Amino acid sequence: MAIQTTSLKSKVDSLEQKAEEYDRRTNTESRVDDAREDLKELNIVLRKLNGSLSDFERQAGILTEVFDQSLPSEAVSARDEVQSLTEVTQDNILDVIDNSDRSLASHVEDVRDARESVNDARRIIDDRLKAIQNDKLGDASTAESIQRIVGEDSDAMKTISQYRSFLNSILDPDGSVSHLKSQWQGLEKAFDNLDTDWEGFRKRHGLSKGTITDLKKLSRQGEVDLDELSEESVNEMLEVPELRSTIKVSL
Image 1 (spheres, rainbow, N blue to C red):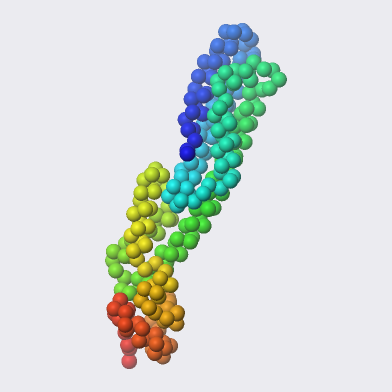
Image 2: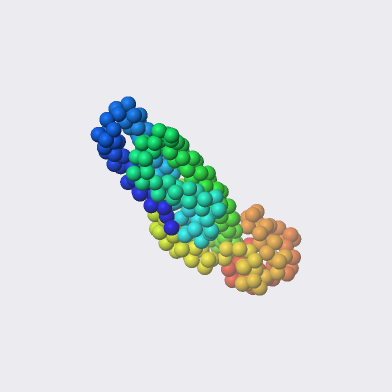
């Protein structure tokens, strides 16, 4: 569940007014001036925290909702740390101002520390997303290799291109998490209808592992000499309709 970052801002929106109330109550101008300066700084660091939280929650949502992965423990801890700050009320802030034993600046440091934790947690999430990205981009490359040897169906190549484009965008995406989730579900369904791995292709067509090795070489090189292929590989390829058009004999 996403943290309601707007609640942090709402807790400090009227702090300036509270400082004025304090002024009327104590009539201690110098202390109020100091408090106002600290409150300005608190507003600044809270705005920065809100920005970091927005980025953090978006990436956390991509990891957990789009790719159905669990949130790293560091991210859970960062959320808890921020949640404790959201529970600080305006009256709590006034108490800090009234209490000469603890300056409001210490609360400002608490917010800075929380933001640092959030930024660290986001980097960990991004590392997880990079691992997912690399793994699935490898699947896209394999699917593309298979397409090269079965004739490059235009719809299939378009699906692979869109699949790859989405994965390349996940570290800096556009749109809401719910939109990204819907988009990914559609792409994943279309992609799964293709031949996306060599082992699946081998089983579906009843090919030997040796033939798959030859097909991988053909995909990489574009062409192979006939004497480099075993009779078994050639016969198996000719039995697969999608592969017949890829076999050309040059004299």
